Length: 98
Ligand SMILES: [Zn+2]
Image (cartoon, rainbow, N blue to C red; front, side, top):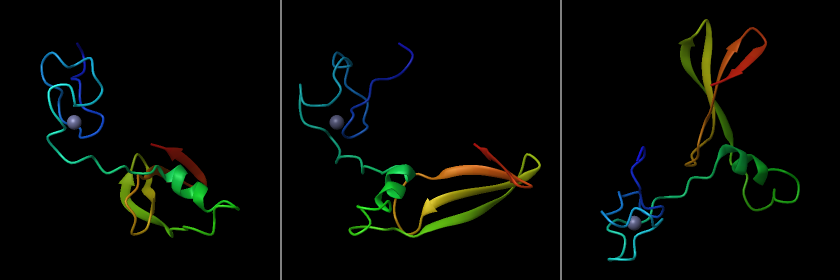
């Protein structure tokens, strides 16, 4: 098996004999509290699209990370909100997604 089976709720490895299950529960409940569910940046951005704008609009930030591959590495993320980030390298007016 190439990848260790992990519980989709708590992220802990599944016990031997239960690798075929997606979640703990056969021999006992999850040993850890559930993983926080992080929205993707796209999901956050979609909240700002007309119609969903009213309930949540996080501010978005560009954070410069430094020089990389002959350009500048920066990330876009929702400020003050736990989410995934999008990584880019800017060279002139070109963007490369990392
Ligand atoms: Zn679990």
